[in-house]
Structure formats: C-alpha cells, structure tokens
Length: 118
Image (cartoon, rainbow, N blue to C red):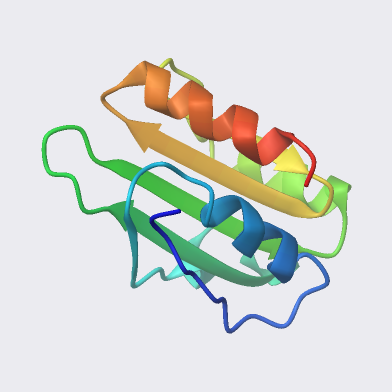
C-alpha cells in the first residue's frame, strides 16, 4: 500500500473514503481544493483533492462529502462534470467523486475501486 492517507474531515463516510484512497495504486498527495466555488456548494459538507505524484500520466481525484445521494448526484450534474474515458464522476451513497487522467484504464480502475465494498 503506497498511501497512508488520513482525512481531517468530519463526515460519516470519511473513514470509508480513506480506505479506498489508501488502496489506489498511485502514490497520492493532497492538494488545495476550493470546492466552495462549485455550483450547489451549499449542499457540500466538505471535500478533498488528491493528485498522483507520477508525472507521465497523473491521476486527479476529487471527493465531495454531502448529506445524501440526491445532493451528491445533483452536484455532479450541476457542475456539468465530463463523462469521458479520461474523466468520470460517480456517486457512492452521500459521496460524489471525480477521477481524471489521460490514462482511461487508470480512471476505470479507480472508479471500480471506489464503487466497490470494503
């Protein structure tokens, strides 16, 4: 396991998202994430953003913690996030996550990981 991420977020799914982030094959670093500029940000409790340290085909992962599936899904739609092989978003419970990389296989692998169970 390359990552030892510990989120300083108070949300019922923060520990579960730590579990998934720590299982990403890429080494991740947390970067500044101003989620308050997103549309419908009043429905977001908190958020975090990670970028892989690999420079050839880096991966970006944004996670938004909401109160419900409905809120998380609405955030993705309102912000018109792309759904391309190299950039996809999804919802797992009350968490919306967005994964982006020039490597479509990495995007799919991470989305599969986040959609899975612990």
